[in-house]
Image (cartoon, rainbow, N blue to C red; front, side, top):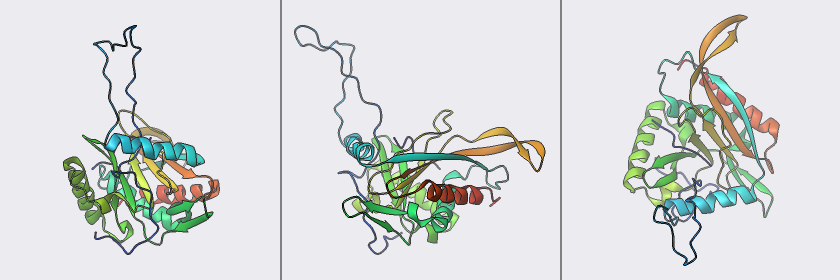
Length: 257
């Protein structure tokens, strides 16, 4: 699923509407195992069962749709972030880089209707931010992300994280996104296959940054790199489209600031 949350705006005029589960939350986490019952139908005292509700039930619905309705494909790459002036400014930099990706290849930033065969590419980037909360994983929206400064993005991320944890997000703040960012850096995870919520067609997962021996101008060097995984809907987005998008993301992330 869309793994863990991204760390670290008045809504625009109506654009293509993204699918939103009943409570606006997205991807499915581990399912509680259902133990075998005894002859009398009793459940072992050591077992724990959980009936999915709220965010986790919404997660079930959205990820079921993603798995059954979409032709998922993932491309991966590493971004050299060794020269960053703010080495831990991951989420704002990733959002800015995804805006650059959407400008280079607009097909990833929009929604697709299988019924009509129409891909609606949004002129504005409304960033879905997958966030882990005590209540489950949700996707909140940063509207018009391409028109915000890094400082404004940072403030909006902090506000949405607080509202998500407090369960004070408004209905309009968990829908309307045109592309999604997910942080899959829990533990030592590098790459994954993040799942987008239909009808959106793209989601970028960022893994755990690491130091790696690489070749730089013909010399061996140790550089800090950030692993990236871009999942797209192959029904309407070609591999070359996804590669152009990811290439623009990587190029923007290489910049020092």
